[in-house]
Image 1 (cartoon, rainbow, N blue to C red):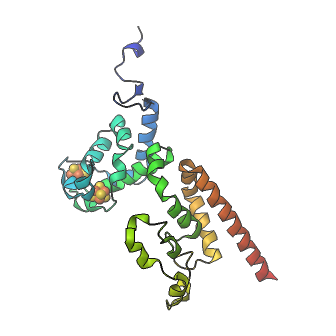
Image 2: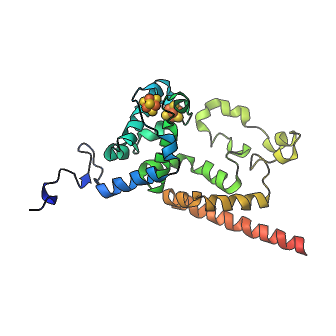
Length: 247
Ligand code: SF4
Ligand code: SF4
């Protein structure tokens, strides 16, 4: 008699009240193993008293349907379905302030565990990761291509419509104002400070070697292509500059 036919372990896990397609158990195990395999996992999770101190001091728990105690418990008890479920929405509520890590009597870091779950969500190209990161594509483009997160010319009525009338206070002759700053490296408007070619090329190597670009390709292929074009161009410029020095 086959035991497979009578097993109580479901092969596919779905949410009975949503239209989202069920996920197979193998995928859930793969996701949990990726979280657990990270070198930081054993450092961030030492056990859990279920005392709730982390949730009591968590700012995100005050405003959202989110509890660091719950996240830690899910990982500690290896609740694969609920871990996957939390990765659809809850983990994106954490503000990464690490108040929880400072307070936990067990030395856990719930915020650090959330970070591992977020990185895994990105690695697996989860829709939740894509939709959370989509509004930040302009900032990611600036950060990865120049090493600057924001630049003066991004602060304009179009870029910060949610600032309302206050945006007029920064709607000023930027190039002139920036020149009034004593440090010459800050006389730029397209970047927050001047980043030389060598530094840019070194940054690109870091993004490549640390897997940042692979992650970006998984969640936003178009943005990845644009950034690759910029990187190729800057690398060519750097090579030309090096050739000029040899002449
Ligand atoms: S993670 Fe720490 S603070 Fe939070 S419930 Fe567990 S033991 Fe308590
Ligand atoms: S790091 Fe995240 S989970 Fe921890 S206290 Fe801050 S918001 Fe809450």
